[in-house]
Amino acid sequence: MRDFGSGLQKPKLDDEVLSELRHAIVNPLTVLLGYCEVLASRKDLPDDVAMLAHELLTRARECAGAVERLFFVLSGENEMAQPDSFGHEIGQEERHAKVLVVDDEVVIQGLIAKVLGKEHKVVNVSTGEEALKLLEKERFDCVILDMNLGGELSGRDLLERMQAKMPHLARRTLIIGGGSKELLSQVASEFSLGGYVQKPFRPDVLRQIVLTMLLAKQE
Image 1 (cartoon, rainbow, N blue to C red):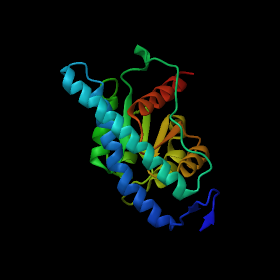
Image 2: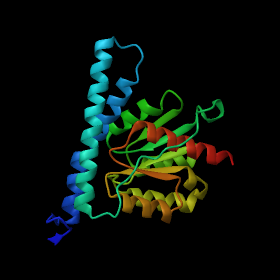
Image 3: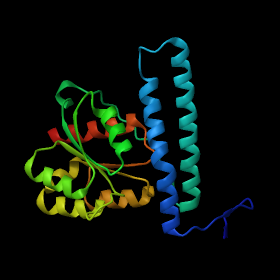
């Protein structure tokens, strides 16, 4: 262990153990946080239910913050991820995009469909092989790809295939994952992607990054 000041020492975990721990904690937390935001945003709730929904959302955000700080300490990253903020409002021209979601977690697929489904057509697939087949025969405005994808084609494998066969999609591809912010940033930079989001993510941040990619598509 190393002393990081104030008598505190940073624990050392094997990278594989850290990755498994992050995946086990972050995926269900992402779903919880996402659906709490969806519930709290509803306008048709009775006052007492709305109050409880906002209280639950507050607690979920606090939990997400605590988990983020935990993995910040365990991973040794230089800075904590900050929520991205954007100044755009969604206009009619950015609505109704066709979005391909590539994630082997059905609950994450459902969450993203819930977050984006009112404004866009969302198509879910669970493997890189399915994604590649669809991308080769259909047109998509953007792609959301889980880097921790299971199956024969990993998230990186799919990015490499996309880079070779459809490089125009790079700026419209968003990667998500429970890995470190530094790793996601490196992959996004390496493949010149539209962005990345670390799990657990806020639905409004995901929505705004998709919007930003769609706006960039028009430039």
